[in-house]
Length: 469
Image (cartoon, rainbow, N blue to C red):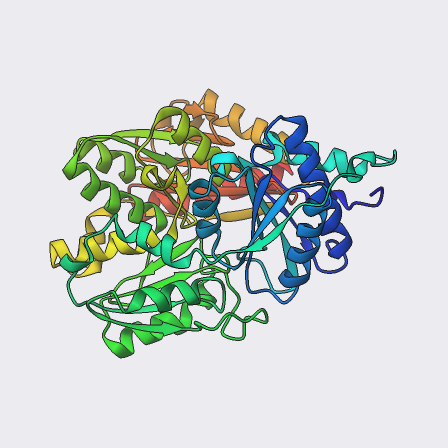
């Protein structure tokens, strides 16, 4: 396929506009190339690939054509139908499949679609671990003689009950208090899972936008955006619920809202779950560079070992697997559990929070309150022509030391970390500056001990970035 659009290949997945950038032909060729990739890596295994899809209107045709490509390369395809990304990962692990493909654009708008891939054991295939090679196979100009193989077998399987039974083993549902919750499924993959689980919960669950619908009539399936949480927050307050829960389009990301209708930061959720987990046994907890300084402090206070690393699901999964880390989390609402094969699982994260609320018998806002120790900027994006150059200039400025604006003392150079972009730490503030994977942007996250330092440092960095770009 010489005309493959290179822009659909991203750091962690394949994604683009349908049908201009990604379409049925792309999906078919991708299936062929994936099969060839697994063979070249000697990872074809039992030649069985799990294929699932989200609720997007284009996902049906894309999944069918991708499966055809795999079948024509003599791979057996198990069609899981409409499922969440975590259920697909579970299927690959539990059935011992050679790999899996989730047809989804996750939290992106309805006019986009794509593929998330994994190999045996649900280990991710990302840009650095195979996607670039698959892209190369799709771009080859020579005749693809490898398609002339015996036809694979197509079967269909419903693993929802088996998956839910597995997830429920991690939490004793009988000990949960009859909490009142509101769950927003975003018209995505999570509607069937939440609807099936709701009867096992002792409290009352009001489910919003449970019906899978590729047009996303309720709102766009990105719960990180404030406008997409508006209805959930209103319902939580109107129903006097104990909490609200919002899932993204393919169900691997979850955002929580407390009883006051306020969103709880993703790194705070990680700390809360880690705190309860560490009460039972000590262990390692992964957190990423954008997390509040309170997160490693809290983990240490509770007897755990904080492990700092890069954001991105494929990075986190491999790091956790390599170092046998018990729990990991991302600011964006992904939570990774050793018990799920180091995969992210938003449904299990929800059940863990319900368990914690039941055990503590405290309001959600009261549990989160001690973590609101510092003042944060949120992510601020700057459009620049040379992101790498900006990071270099910023590093030089803050490593060598600087005169603090509006203050009466000179500050020494900060502690430099280059785990994911550039992080610079000072005693009473720190920041992380990263390049965007897809746009000419740098992304700034900054935290300080008081609001005055926060505003001062945001202004200082904004001025320097703008002058340097």
